[in-house]
Image (cartoon, rainbow, N blue to C red):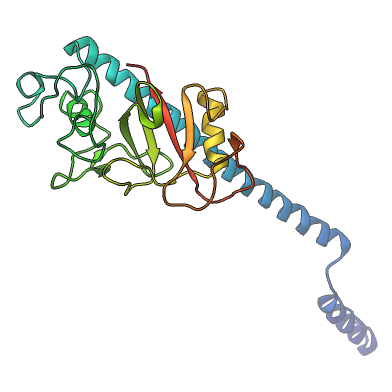
Amino acid sequence: MKSVEESTYIFIKKKLKCRKGFSLIEISVVLIIAGLLITASLKGVSLLYKAKLYNLQSQVKNIQMAVDAFKDKYRALPGDYSEAATNIDPTCKNGNGDGQVQGAPYRIDSEAGQFWVHLNKAELYTDSGEAVNGALGPKAGLPESSYGGSFTLHHNPHGLWGHWLQLSQAGATETGEGQALLTPEQASQIDHLMDTGNPQGGSVRAFDGSNTSGKCLVNGRYNLSHKEPACVIYIKLES
């Protein structure tokens, strides 16, 4: 049987153990776990950015394939097709058949607006959804991108030849002057993945958005020091 002195010693020893701080080993373990959690979090963010990037590339490819299929079937460009109301759907508005998809991109009665209607009604590209009360917007007659905003179709924008997909913030002016959606870094990543990385050459071009005082480009290069949305990009549609 333990004496009173022994019992008291054991009791005090236990109390002291309960009151002592973390050991160096315990602190090291906590720091290692915290580091692993931070690393995993950063990797998760990186994976999210990459997913957006590759989803955007996939979207553009799907739109291009839909346009190619439309041309093979109807021998015309969507939006410009002069017999769409007869051969696709009576709710379609006919184009003039001149080989150019023109007009205000946010007007459903223009060829540029009907571009998405023709593809949708022909069941070749339905991700654009249906216009709401005749108004075009993301998922309401226009495709929403993985970065948000929407795609619109433009003919010879900013002096560029041919048909281009513009990616900009929703709510651009009726004439299609794009509002900034992407940061210069995001625009640069898209450009490097899909083209040469040169914002003023190739099949991906970048311009300043209409609603920002920040610059997308400086001296012909992406302004990577600017961290806020400043860019609108155009992606060439092979037509």
